[in-house]
Length: 440
Image 1 (spheres, one colour):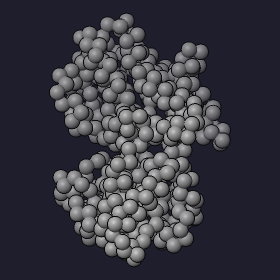
Image 2: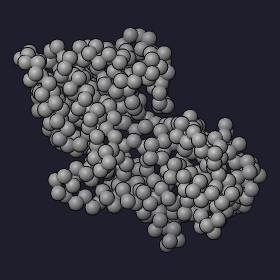
Image 3: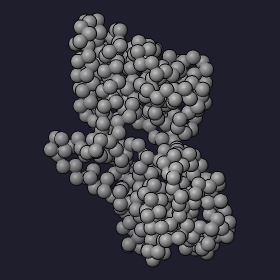
Image 4: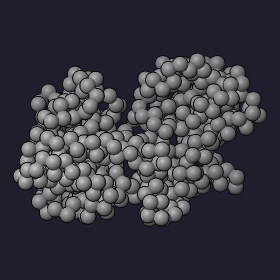
């Protein structure tokens, strides 16, 4: 099948590469000529395990192409994915200008029937706006042969495992009121639907809400556990024991109940805000969602508050080693990362930072190019030298079993603030560390 994907970010690039891998002929369109040129040369703009080889192999095989020529993309595929960004507007609502711009472009250049698929995370009612946009352009063209369907097909990819999630989806949501469009979507996704039925067909509005509801549910679990962790510290309980106790209940499960420094990334923060804004539009008070967001914002300050308390508020001239800059492991994404909140608070207090991350160093340098108080180090060990404390922010595998004797020798004093509960408090005490965990 011929497929066009507008947007080469996390969603568009992964979806395009995976569809090409199973045999579809995919053209990815982007407005950034530099990005397209790099992709044509096999250079991937994001770090995502398994993606680089997938893109290179399918591009070499001719099944995956990249272009800035939108008319070529529109004419190529009967199926047109919209996978562009929907950044938060000033009021927290999703900014749909890029989605609607792509819809207008498709309408302007389509030469026959098109199935327009909203893959971007968009609020309820976006499919209707896409329809209105396309109809507005087609009215000017006045060609009865130009017909279209709009389908909501939200993505459920986790950064760090996006390729695997796309190749082996838990579910494939199709929001459509067209049986013909549904049939095409079933054919498109047939290679991913062989083991058992994963396709769930529903109305468009329900499909649009499903995406937001899923992300908001996961964010709620995280904020709930962070609230329990804060309570556990005050009550003298161990949140890790609590986590095991409640996770063993199959109604709760172990996923997304790890306490930490708060969630970040491109999805949870903006999706919570967008759904809150959607609720306000229909005069509904989303109190739970607002509480989830509030708890997460406060949780991102948790490490700084512990550091400040330990040093009795005097951080001027202190140096802190930070392990982990990306908002989660297996990605280089720094959007809404807890590390940024921590570093900026430390700098404001007069401290310096020596930081290391396996993948997010380049992105950190881009964000803080002129920051004299930040030193990016080539290894996790070199970040420790001369630091007054180690702060673990991201739970990369490389941080889980370090050389504690080396850490103690490199630090000015053996102090560790662990935002991800990677280490055993008793073992840390035995090794002579002052150890501050989360909820323990």
